[in-house]
Image (cartoon, rainbow, N blue to C red; front, side):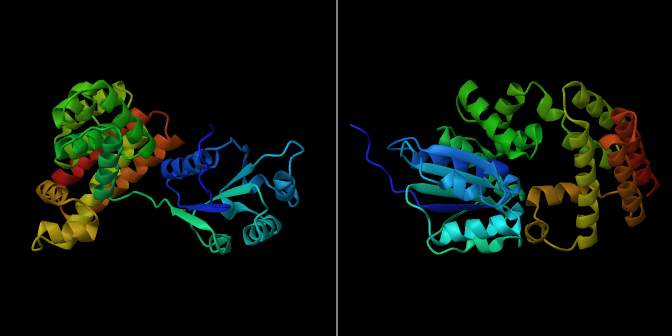
Length: 320
C-alpha cells in the first residue's frame, strides 16, 4: 500500500540568498510533494522564462498526474512573467505545486505576499555564532557531538562556505569516533587547520614575517585558494581597524556583540594591536587591497602578490 500523502502547499516561496539552505528547502518540498506519487518536475530559472511559458508548463498532461514547477531567482523575472506568476499564486491550478526561490530584495517582492503562500526563510549565515550553530546542527543531524574547540578548528580549517562546511561535517561524522574536538579536526585535516589563510593573517598582523611566509607557502602547497588567503588578510587588517577604533576601555563581551565577533576574537585582536598605529593600519589596508586585485587576475603570480602583501603588512606594523 502506498504511504498516505502529505498535503503540500500549492505555492511555496523560499526567501534568502544562502545557497545551501535554499537548495535544501527546495529538495524538502520536492520530497514532500512526491510522498504518494512522484510529480512531473520542471526546474527553471525565472530569467529564462518568457511570457506564455508558465501556462504551458502548468497545463494538464495527457497522462494525468501532478506537476511541480520550481522557478529559481524569481526576482529576475521580467514584468510579464512576474504577472503570470502572480496570477498563478492568486489562483493555483489543481494538481500543480509551485516553488519559487527569491533573494529577498525589493524586485518582484510582491510575489512573496500572496494569500495562502507558504514562506520558508533562508537568511545568510554571516556571524561567527551563527556558523557555530550551523555546525552544531549539522553534527546533530549525523548523531555526533562536537566541542567548541572542534567547531572553531573546523572553521579555521575549512573556511566559511556552507557547502564546504556541511561536507566537512559529513566526512568527520562518517570517518571519526567520539567527541569531535580540536585534536580530531587537526588529525583529520593533517595540518591544514594550522596552515589556513587565517593563520597566515594572524602571523602577519603580529609582525612575525618568517612564520607568516612559512604558513603561506604551506597553505598554498596544500591547496588553499589564494583568494581565501587574501580574504583572510583583509579580514585580519580590518579587525585591527574596527577593534582599535572602539578603544580599549570597553568589555570584550559588549564590544563583541557590537562588532559581530566572538569575545575571544576581540581579546586576540587587542593583543595583535600592540605595535600598530591608525596610520599603519590604513597603509596595511592599501597593501591588502592591491594584493587582492592581483590575486583576482591583475597580477601574474598570486603567490608572489601574497608574499609581498605580508611583507608590507609586517613593515606597516614595524613602522607604526
